[in-house]
Image (tube, rainbow, N blue to C red; front, side, top):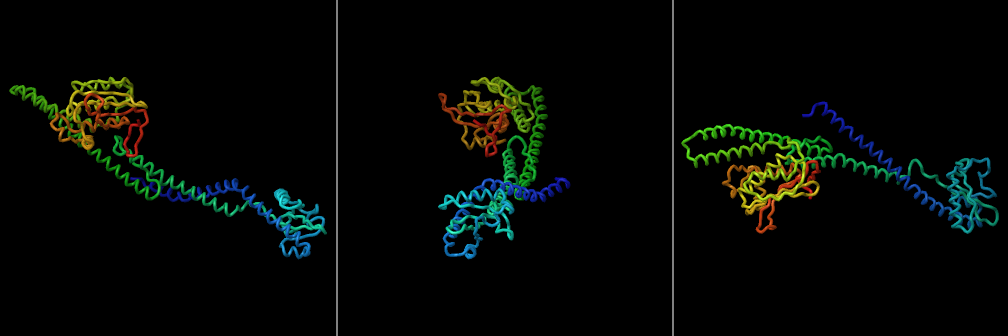
Amino acid sequence: MASPVRARAGGASRLLRPFGYGAAATGFTALALLLLHLVLAQRLERQQRRQLVGQVSAMVLLSEVALERYSPPELAEVLGNPVALGARPPQSDPTSTPADGTLRRQAEALRTDLCSKLTACPVVWAVGQRPPQGPGRGVWVQLNSPLETAWVFAPIPALRGWPPDPQLLTLAGALGGLTTLLLYLSLEVQRPLRQLDTALGEVGLDQQPRALPARGTGAVRHLTAHFNAMVLRLQQASQERATMLGGIAHDLRSPLTRLRLRLAHQVPWSEEERRRAEADLTALERITEQFLLFVRSDAQEPPVQVPLQELVAEAANAVDAVELNLEPMERLVRPVALSRAVANLLLNAETYGAPPLKLVLRALPQEGFAIEVWDRGPGLSPTDWERARQPFQRLDGARGGVGHSGLGLAIAERVARAHGGELGCRRSSHSDAPAFVVTLTGRSLQSHLVTSSAGRVAFER
């Protein structure tokens, strides 16, 4: 249970989280506005320049035609812009306020564009005085008049700096909001769900799944809480199972030992009766040992770099006769667990299969290995194979064996997963007669394990 201090800290972080995303949205909007201004400012300026050239050229042509019938004041009233006569336009004397550098550059660009549109290049005079001292920010353009020199004023708006263009501001706000939404979905939804998916992939493997911190949206935190409750129940069930099986196995060992001692001192028994009783005791001891091996965790065994062909050859001593086809290699494995798994596979093949048996060891890419046990028995169907891999499951056709508790394949599969591999079977017709093959794959423990979408540690071929 979380402490009150940690709960208050978590509540405060949830309260402050909206302010953090608000600040992020503001920052993203400002960054988007800056980038859009850098990218689109020149394009907007060119568009504004084209519009201005079209308006000014039309106004100049109209003014030149209208001056033949109207006076400058009447023409100014019609155009809505000042019209002046004289060798120099108003506010162009040296004592007036000079135009700024930006306006002069705009005036030069306007004159260049007007030269390409009009029959003659007009004189363009930039003025920057604001009313009432002047007509405003713009240029005086000389008209082509046959009588007296005339000028018409064309206002030029300043390049927008701040506040920014409304279209750019709207687009920047949309981009900033979208980026913040993606950040929110990544941090509050996608990342917690990815962690939950990884943790779910660990359920059912040898290691215990870990509880996850409550992060993300309310729905994700609710789902995480259910997962943590499931983890707690699994841990309790696993502990209860281990305690129960371990207690049963330990409780059986003492009476079995006493029975064997009494059997050794009972002289009246016949040889056949003694042999059968000793076989029953051996079967009980083997079942007890299988129980202990199943509940005991192999994760505590340290990995050791060993010649794998020698380890597998030693495990082959569990059966009487087996053909060996072992490829020399060295791998970093848990030797006791792997040897136990190979011995279980050989004993199953000897008990439920048919001779001759063959044990194959071959190398796989990326420091992998495959251990195959061949026999000439009928084998198992896919349905029976799935059942046989479950703990304490014995098929009806397999009953009658000595000392088997249905844990051999379960232990072998657990060892395969612990080595980054899996346990599988197939029918093979490579030899003279069809054979049933059980394959245990794995790799050196320092190699990378690939987790499949189903949550099982799969061996990458």
